[in-house]
Length: 335
Image (cartoon, rainbow, N blue to C red; front, top):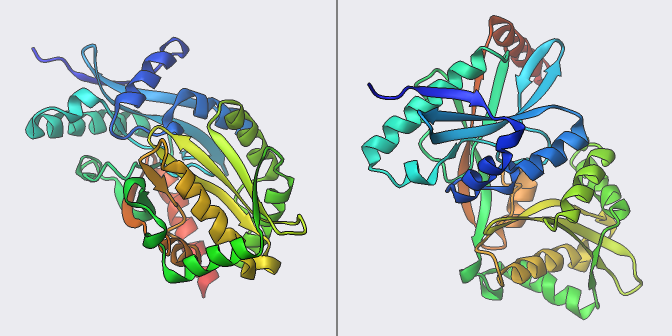
């Protein structure tokens, strides 16, 4: 008799096993690793878990889960500053015959779906851009939403791939002696992040303490790097944090002082970080492609617009009613 597909939460003794699986998967990101998850848990105070599907003793797929309780509703949802926290498929399954691969992933998603709906009122999962076949989720009644990021293949990147407006800004920043500096002091960046969101009429979706805790932990692990651009008077005018994730660099957090937008410093800083990443990475993920003003700026760097998918599902009637009320409230606010 064929072995059954079973979803279960991994124990703390299995974290090394999980990290090995993540590193070998085509959907590998640092966001799914145990060290990133522990940093998130420290910053949020929320519990996390890794749920894996096995067929017998063979690992098929799994994903990280973070809990959030809001108005009595238990939600499985990714935390702020985490673009992808979705399905991880084993390298062995991914390399299998397409029909067997499809069967195994479908059964794994069914097992995960059953596991979720027994425990959560609502579930949100944002998947890696490399996972393009979401039918195993939609066939289980999950909703699907397409989102976008912008990715640069670093082997083809050069100053010639920049839009002419960016080349002019880079040249201007050099003429005006804009200097780049690596730092571990988040004070200036936090202020500029608030300025950038405020300029768009939005509140920052994470606290300074959250960013500080997460950055300190990831910086200590050699994953997060903070850079500033300063004008010739030494004023900080732009800042960015990049995050290393296997063969990808993420343009993770950024902010700029709008007083100095014309200096070209923001474009010069981002261009320099992309250029720097060519030495030992394959992809620079610009992120931000779902926000119109940011998307226009970042498309000037010559990246490829790349879709990724968000899947969601109510696990209980309470979860369905809560979602319905939120949708009604959202429509009312827009009228």
